[in-house]
Image (cartoon, rainbow over all chains, first blue to last red; front, top):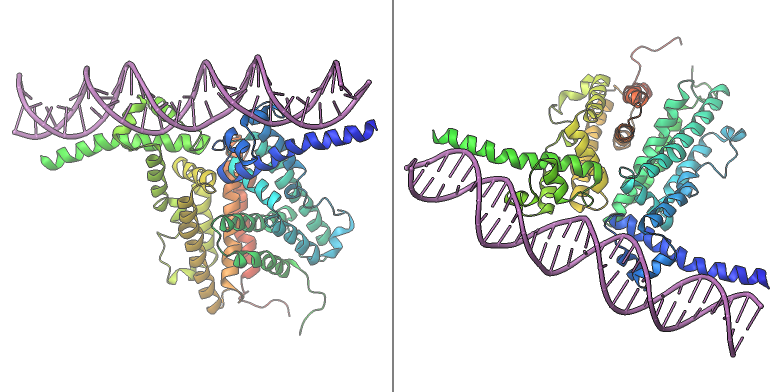
Length: 217
Length: 217
DNA sequence: TTAATATATGAACGTTTGTTCATATTGAAA
DNA sequence: TTTCAATATGAACAAACGTTCATATATTAA
């Protein structure tokens, strides 16, 4: 009994709380944090502004909570579902699956909003910068470096600077993701950019791979 | 006489006007447009807020003027000083000079501020998005495509999709430029990113160039 | 049921904001 | 010097803002 009650209470309670977060994320990511008013948020969920203060101390705390969610979002967890050790043996198909993960972020509403929030507030919010840098950039580039290093040792790809390769693989994906989110804003066609994710992997792999059989000569 | 008077009058008049623009750009690029108040701008130049309204209709007009400057800024004019026709024959050194131009943007205060302003407002301001897309992205990628196409015909580089190459050359440069501006915000060391511009060109050229003399076999 | 708790409301608050305007000051032209 | 246009000032404004709080309502526990 008490268990169930606690659960329903939690569910009911956190429903409005999560609704605030959901609505705020939508508004913050399209108008920016500063330009979004507490009245905007309350209005969008059909509630009076004062109601929000039963769930959050103030407007900043809403943003802080959303930013905390960033750490556990798909944006930051590109490698999470993957075992890092023997992963490199998949070669190109692994790179392709990473690129696809990147691409899909732009097509999930929640993640797209988080990405836009990140892009808009990264110059103003030191915490966002820290999460972006450590969890999104550094961590992924480090793991990519490890993959490329293993591939080099296994003579799957040409030897070289793994960290450079990681950056060169990562940066176009990031750029195409940003391009996607910008095109969607103006409701322009995204097809040309969407195809770039795969083309990037194709070209990248062709440039680094070591051919198994020697040709002609 | 009258000429000189007009000049001095213009200089004096536009001195305060350009001082407003200069101060506003500095503040907009660090706090964002919305978070910067008219009092902030006036205070930073040692003047009362009402004085600004002799030079600009309102706060938005200040931003609009700055945005207009974007079109003629170095950010957008990477190819301007270069003749596009016979340019491709320079090969790698041309790519290197483009990369250097990119890099130097981050080390010029005015251009760095414009870049930060662009990044912060691009999701909110449709005009900025348009300038970014048409003048910064599309125009540069189109010119790069032309270069790579010519290089392919001249058998300097492997044949392939010129537009893909252009995007793959452009996107890391953009990304590294963004990384630079973020690192500078937190006064972190930029040396590792600074070296990426050249490494990118080296690797990129190695991957596409056609060797003049055939080796060994 | 009753008591206790959580959540929503309406009204109000003190600030901050962008902007206006009558007036004062300045600098150039005559 | 006087005249006139350009610019700066101080004060004020209405609107928008984040936040508070006493009160009302709804939900859960006993």
